[in-house]
View (cartoon, rainbow over the protein chains, first blue to last red):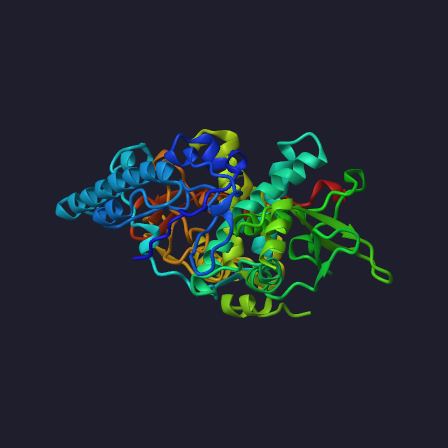
Length: 307
Length: 186
């Protein structure tokens, strides 16, 4: 049984951009602890992820007793308590239902059971499944097809390029938040980086390696501003099959990757503005993509305090 | 030039560029979540996913034919096998099994035990009507339509709804005869 919890500064100040939190009325939307103040600082060894949408990444306690013990322990206890009780109820509910199912009508499937809301619900909990090793692969074209549909769909939803980039970034953000959680758990033994350079190299090496099969081409510090860092990639995976029409100006599908980076950084307690840019390279036909990371002031303040 | 021998699914999958399945899974998840936010109705999301799948299928069949060297199938049975053993393997890295043929040989079930789309996924109460993998049915429909087969693809079993496997029912509606000569050849 794997229990994940988002206490201790887990919530961060971006719930309104997150699809699930803003649209459903789950108790998770009441958790809006912004990532500043004392508890927001990363605490080494204590595994606290920023889970932007607590309703999706299941907060799940298997044992209701355990819930009682932990209740009210975190700094976001008010929000979490309501989630606890909600989850306990629904997990007890589903256990009862699965017992019922074992008891008699196993295998019987009705149309209502598939479609109706709140009817007989038959799920096995996703956290009970063993975590995959992350070795599975799909073909690059499968991903390229999917990504192209993602871009095309979002294009129908917007009026301008900035909006399109924002939407792609949002999609990436959702990926980043999950990647952080997954990788901290699987690759880092439930620890995550707490220092600026640590988290940057985590993004540049670990995250890149897992998602794109290689470490990023370079990680640099901006020369003009103290708070800017750049991750550059000669040929970003998502841009491999993309050619941007002339009338779309500087639009870069790397916004999706920028969103992933933002999701990882935000979740780890390093809020930043992340953008993707094409940078022409001498002697190369195609420009490289640079992901520009501009950290929030509080991050740099904290970093200098830590020395 | 003699036609090249058709490749097995494993051989094709080994020869194409690949990407981590988790990136694929999470990207798909992010897309579904965007759709849910934008469209609000679960049925609309199902429809949109099917449409996206269709768009993919229409383009994907080209790549499939080019890379697998599979030529014209003699009957629908062979088509089913090729989809399950080569098509799924080549793109998603998993194989499906073909079962439950009906008496006329016009509809069959594709059973997937492994499905890279659904790692980390659990449907919340509000989305119980969602066919999370509806994009797959669209892909099949689109791809088959491009090789002159009108089909209807529906979900029969879905592990996210508590079933023990993923089962897609593919029903051949009609075979559209190819017309020669094409207009633009005149």
